[in-house]
Picture 1 (cartoon, helix red, strand yellow):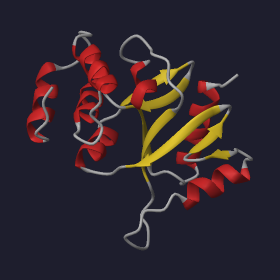
Picture 2 (cartoon, rainbow, N blue to C red):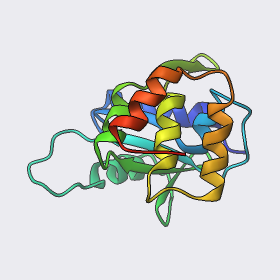
Picture 3 (cartoon, one colour):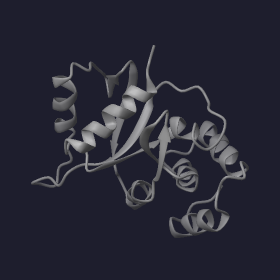
Picture 4 (cartoon, helix red, strand yellow):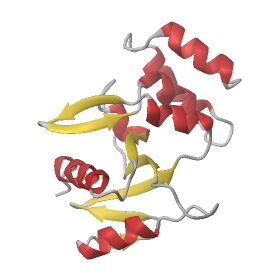
Length: 163
């Protein structure tokens, strides 16, 4: 049975070992911290990688670290404690901010950084990510009463996003 707690411990160890400069849980698993959880296949993790020597982004250090710990790879996922994890390097200014402003929370006494709900909404509303499923998730977050309306409006305005 997959262990979210053990997976979070592994993420924190990756950061402590310098494999990740920073991370933030995103996607459907992040909803667990803000609204009613929904079924999902994997854990999406937005990451800042340590500075590289060139312009090409490489997940090689992540794969080497996970291979040393015998975590199997399945397509774009690393299976950590039975949970498929997809590492997503920050890909634009919105993702950068989502990581920078992530909430420091705990899950079963394990520290975890989680994308704030206002940023989850914005990430769901990006043109390349926008789908009926994600629009539904964005609406659930918006209507949850757990968001900062002014912060959300500022993010939507700055990144030119709408519902």
